[in-house]
Length: 206
Image (cartoon, rainbow, N blue to C red; front, top):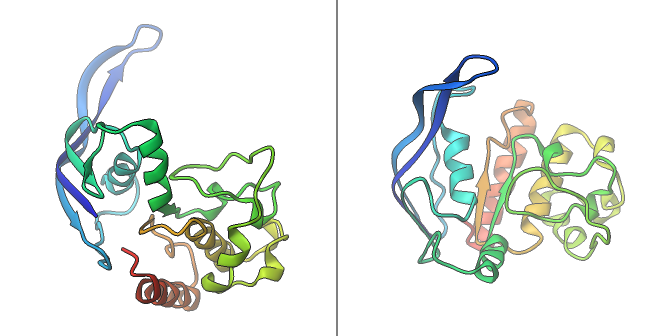
């Protein structure tokens, strides 16, 4: 499903005030190799906080563009070689559940209107669709009666479930998880992890 070879991402280092000058380069991602097959659950492990490159690596893969260095093949096709139409199809097949579910759920929109996207904060559409998310809520440990509730009305664990339901509503084959349980209580962590294991068995998710 995903093949990564020599992935590299750098950021410039600048000094100065009004007149800025580049003085160096930070290698946030340096030569990452990765293979993910259907039904597998690999993990990227690194130090907590900024600087270890875990999230940078994930977002580089999800940009669906040619990487700065190295190669990425998603579902057998090399990133940077396909059309915008093909990119839209791939965004349905790969979804993300963020560490902070509020970054994916519009605070002024009911949970059912939180349309999936391939990454980053969600911008509410003018005509939000309620078709996908309510049917996915039961699978994520929530229920359809919660579809009209606003994100601030949920607990942290419930918001995380809604965020997962949002990602699952389009039937992805690859689900990217950015530390989805790090901010939850231990008991809630266990519930969310068991939920993910069940969905992997039922859907063959990677």
